[in-house]
Image 1 (cartoon, helix red, strand yellow):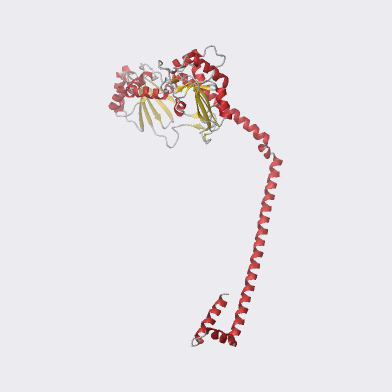
Image 2: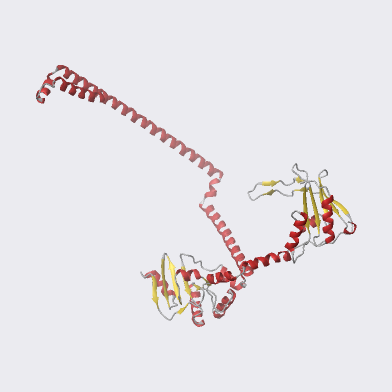
Length: 459
């Protein structure tokens, strides 16, 4: 095709060049048509064109054949993989492996995890109730209201509740408590009664108002919803479900409100239907923030630090009346496999180990004394000057001045130029320490711990 185009252009240009002296273009065209040489060239050009077209058809035919071959190969590969999967499936069925994925077995496993999840929830509720009693100061009955397992869950997408305030009469509040219990709705307060200082006082008042009711609703502080729905007048009833919210004031008919929610196109605030009262309580969140801001945290922190040593368990040991020496073999046998949280086994059952036998073992000298005994302080000062200790050195005390514990400890650190540690109670019983002071050293040759008790009267 390219040759044909080139030939036509060449012929035209040659014709124009050979006859450029003729003025009439029609006469030039007639003269070109009569030239036998040009006719032969035209025939040759047509033959070339036909040859190129035939070659193109052959190429297209080969491409079609190749595509068909590739398609057959792809189908064969898919069939081979399907057959392999079917064989594997039959083997799994024969071995019973597929039974694990049966609908019955999956349902069984789901029930198992559901039961486990329920146990976790129940345990969490029990711990939450216990924590609220211990740390928040609630009594058990009040704490149980916050964690009752039989309460229908309400969340950010479903709310069915009465908003009340102690500005209402006790009779009106009792009526709402009764309706809320019957309709399984909740009752929300914005904060503490204005004359109360604790949650227990306000909840005790609510229980008193509910006296005589056969069924009690869930009563909670929920300043978040008071703020979200801008509740400034009570009673307010509200029902939110399926992205639709309706509420009204001055009425305590929850059945009516739910019917409006379900069958009416009305949405949002439906109006006021009776007497309303102002919300008399401050948000409990704001109240807690106000109280927290009034606390002198620096003073509390200082008092906590000062009380630290008064509440510490310290080992009480008498002053030694005689010198004694004994040895402890730290070798132990692992009774069962010990693994970390990732399941990696750290020690195998039956393994015998001695910390002093390892290549990385470093000699250690430890001085144990009573820091409230001046004689033992003098003993320790003398031993540290005279002893030529190799390796690490530690100082452990049994008791400090409880009233001025930090000052006492700082003075000891400054005097000895090192950190001091409290003697663990387990160390006393395990290493048979009955009196102080004691010097402990590691006998690296015999792989044992050496303990030397010193009589204060003689040193």
